[in-house]
Image (cartoon, rainbow, N blue to C red; front, side, top):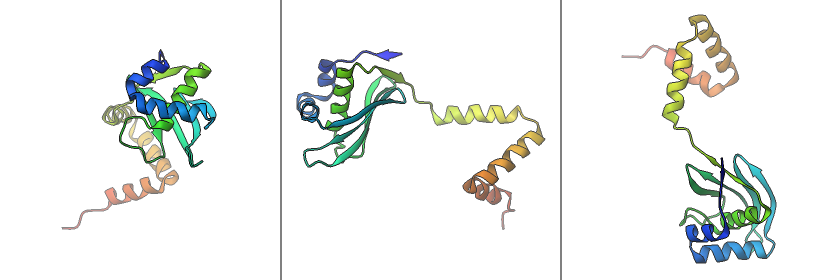
Length: 149
């Protein structure tokens, strides 16, 4: 589902100061390689010192969310994420709302799937996963070792 955003909505979400700085990044040509990814938008943004930051912005669980490798962590979105959001809006790139899955729900779903397998299917699956994933193999071996009293 596409989410309707515009510059005024972004400004009201982040405040006028952050919106202004994000706009400056964009107006000064510091947003590069704009593209879509995972329902959102990715880009590289240069700060005023010409340092590169990888940025992803999207709508997750109904909220505008950004991920950036900068140190601006006092707001939900940094100025680089605001710049990417504004760039996407100007280019007409739609945001698709993403709903994060709860890990407990995933574990319950996989437990139900595993319970539907035969014993032989389950043993084969575990053996193949242990060969493919050394961490899984270590965990399997630790679980299989008898506990010492």
